[in-house]
Length: 285
Image 1 (tube, helix red, strand yellow):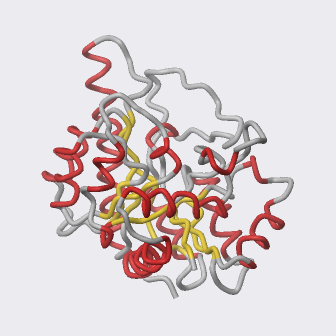
Image 2 (image 1 turned 120 degrees about the horizontal axis):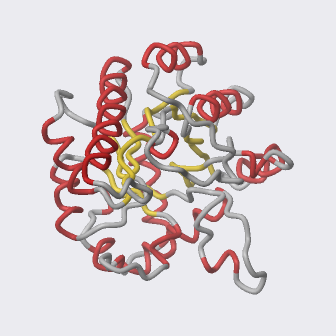
Image 3 (image 1 turned 90 degrees about the vertical axis):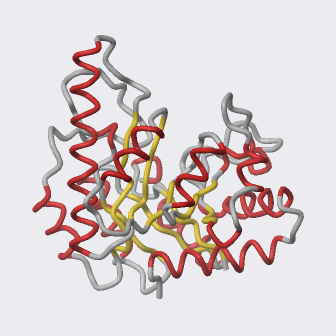
């Protein structure tokens, strides 16, 4: 068994063949967590999970990109179908979580900080960052109240996220740093906090400031989760010979294979331990 701990079959990119994709995954013993990025995609993730007896789970949250600060203009993502929200509505999301069948909502996320699009003036930038931090902290409080782990998103903001988590009132934060792209020092800070590290197709790439081979080698297998972030980040082996291919949960096997290669171990061991990690963190049945 493999568990794709970060999928987006709740996005409009899968509107035409969602059930067919899920059927193939279940037949090949691939389970998944569909991750919300706003209220609409969170609600959709729950709807999908509740259609299946087992193997499909949901996470709910407001992604920092979907928090409309009014300070930046963000391009609409045609694969997601963005729904921007002026603020995080604590009670609305809590109600959504409690309306779901038992065991279907397994995490709060993806939430965090994202400075990819940001204001240019210092004053607006500080206000922008504060708005994101506020939304993040409210969602950390919700995770604590509901006793759920957190799926963290972070882009170009690791130092601020580390500082925010260190200063947080949340007792012990359980969760995963999804799609980690950062330095070895930042990785060590997250591991010190007890967080898991999520790896996806991005580990096949070369990105300035991140040595993925070094990062994977320095992350204990017992702290690794595998994911696709589909429909994004298709692993090269999945697209070989066919040009650009929409990513799907079945491609999580290529991520596991790459991790096994880097760690000089076998695929079966990576599959077994990452599945165990996912089950323990998200309390999957």
